[in-house]
Length: 130
Image (cartoon, rainbow, N blue to C red):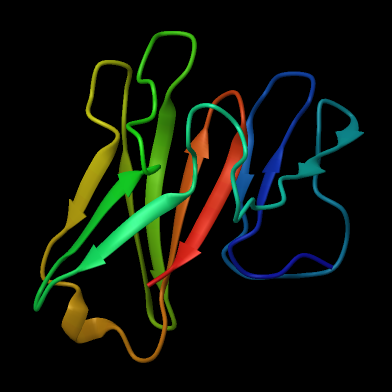
């Protein structure tokens, strides 16, 4: 059974889906089950993938990795998402963009913890808590 905000990928056509609400059954695409993309929380590779979030009085600024992640045609961060108990905000990136986003005026919405997710087209799904 899938749960909220899991990310799945089709290994055939590389479609990616995110569940908004869990349910029974198996997600499938191209006549095959989709792969659940587990989130990394530590990074031992040369380029860093774990999002680094900085909370101000009103905003959350996210940089992907302690060292700037590559943003090239063949290797880039596709999206960054901020998820809380009662909200979800996603910003999509493209090659050439800076690997960072600012979620403006969101701090007043955070009750407890929120999670920042980042997705690298080559190295998958990564997260950290705010």
